[in-house]
Image (tube, rainbow, N blue to C red):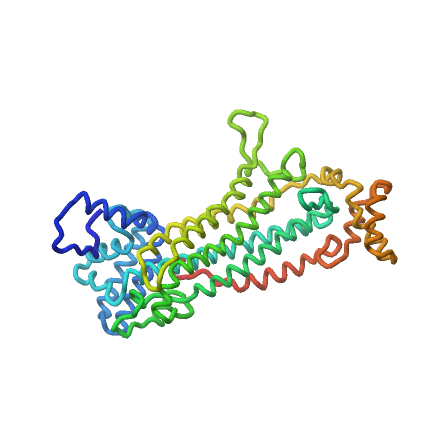
Length: 446
């Protein structure tokens, strides 16, 4: 690794081994993590350059030259010509080194009025906006997949469970409708997080502003933000806090994925045999020829742990006073790890839901006579028998009653949202209303 761009050890005796160890320790994973953030950093740097030109710090010609070089760097990085490796401390130093190599002293002017805190804050903010938006889009797609399957299997009987014990007759439509509505909530939560993230931190330097009339509003608009985050200290205090908010958007959606995966793990066992997974979502055993394992479902169930761990990691770091502290560097890894994991996992789910195959006969057989006890008790209560008396009678006499028709029981369950009145259209209407709030993809970073 080359010398830190901001290293200052005048008067100290050179100790190459010690210097190298300290540089490695302080840089940590940054050069690897910044491969994710570098495109955002480049775009933000170009916007900053044009802002400097608008306030007279750079000439139009110098601004155009730097922006052209930044676009060349972006293209070289995306094509693999430019490699961000351990020659650099991080992505920020890589950008400046590239500009200085291509444009000499002009490249050194790019940092005017800007702190490295500025760079990492805005690059991370842009990255989080993109990933939380993806989470919102994917949650909406999962909800639609659940609704489509719920509609086509609305009246297919399925046992309903509480405490993992058979409880009452239910339906595939109700089961999938429940997940559809849960993912609508996840879309709404992600949109709320996007509104919070929609503010530009760029132009606040190290948390106290600078003695230049920076065009913060113009730079914010150019980067696709609707507003600036006004107070410079608030920007620094938001470091880590906004990362937590973004992770929470992924965590909420992945918690619903975990519950869905748990159900599928049970329902695909031979003991249940309610659902068959397509072969694309299963794997064979390395030793048992008879096995077909739901590995994808199990990994979806486990993936939420990545986000939970990232949340705890950042929360532990944030026991800090106000202003910038170097501890905040360590929030970068968990937020990237968590959001990348969430997006990758959520992308698997719509296809999985759409390809589920339900074993209708097995679900019918699993609906046993005692599961109609609640129906019997409520029929008696509707006829005037006090409910607790009807409850006792149903409990005592359920075994005497012949098997009822599950389909009839479901059709008679007419309380709003229940099997006889699923109201899937209302869930879909809310989904589309909420999904309409998802902002379009940022043309600057997309």
